[in-house]
Image (cartoon, rainbow, N blue to C red; front, top):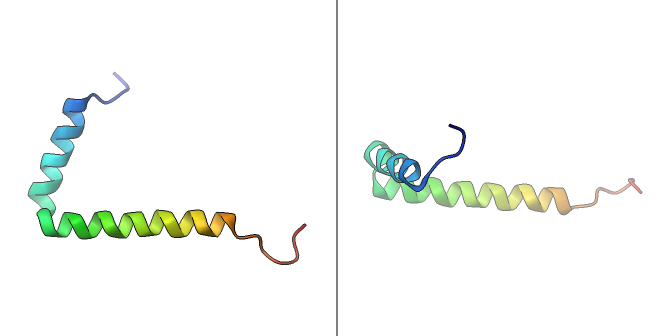
Length: 51
C-alpha cells in the first residue's frame, strides 16, 4: 500500500473520461499545463529589489 500501479492510473483515467468526457478532459489538461507553465515562469522571474 502506498504506490499506485499502472492499473490504478488506468482506472483513474477511465473514471475521468466518464465524468468529464473526452472534449472536456482535453480542455482541463490544456488549462492545467498552462497553469504549471505560468507557475514555473513566475518562479524563474527575479523580482526587482531583491539581491
